Image (cartoon, rainbow, N blue to C red; front, side, top):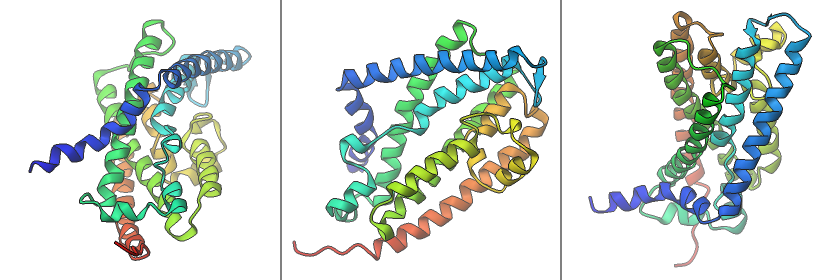
Length: 269
């Protein structure tokens, strides 16, 4: 029982590391401000020569979606490379073996590290959201029910994203390096999840294709619920689909962890 608090301290590694490097935090703040200003100008400019509604979204809805997508990058793109705690780095230097020799299982260690990453990113996103809401850049949810559905959908979406990123990291046990796969994944998930633009603006075949993949469940669904593009009455099936992806990916990644452990060999004492 006494070991449990120490185990949960693993989740503090990322937040503490960031707090001890103020220049990195300043860079994040500047990046968020610049990205927010640019996407607001972009989407307002795009709607200047179109009708009041495009692809079922008004200008205010589109701007709100775009700004929230920028803020969500703090939950999606936190980099552990500087701390040399990525799976790819551990595989390259051979230190991945220590993940399997610790009292904490590698699956739990990875989950706790990811939890710390996302909680730290959530703090940035929440602060940015409060500022944008105060200055009128984003609109509030149109009802308490929509806010609740958005919160649940966002949680499920981050859960799906966690398993997607875990699967890519697990590829390192067979490929040793996954930098190329990571670059492909980042582009694919940003495109198919609606980071660059809401999926409602894409052709019907693209929307249909994305429906069979887990990427849209990570961001497009939560933000579409928030702005009202997915009505509250239709949110139930989308939430169920997100939960289904969570269960499926959880089973797959657990099996891959088991297979990965068989490939790790410890020599010496």
